[in-house]
Amino acid sequence: MTEMTIIEALEKLAELNNYEEILVKIKDDEPTLIDLEIDDIRKFADDPDQTFNLIVTEYTIRELDENGNEKLGEPLYRVVK
Image 1 (cartoon, one colour):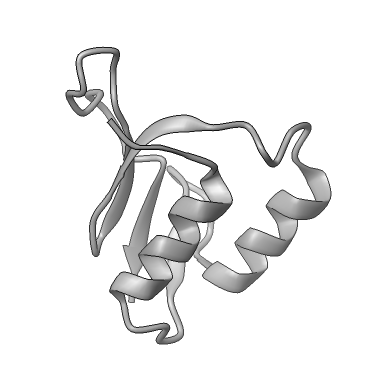
Image 2: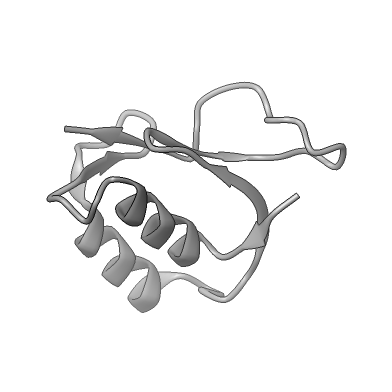
């Protein structure tokens, strides 16, 4: 399992996409530039340093359960290009 903050996961997502202009989407929200999403988390999150068990691919950030399996349902973030 990989423990990381949401900011670290978003930065990894940017890295996997070669730091191109990336739009990310949370559930049904409007797509947001990844840099703006990171800034919003830094400004408005209760605890931006809170860690989660996450898996980051080129297209998504998903939370892992206690056994290291991807949780079912919507990803936390998905890339919209």
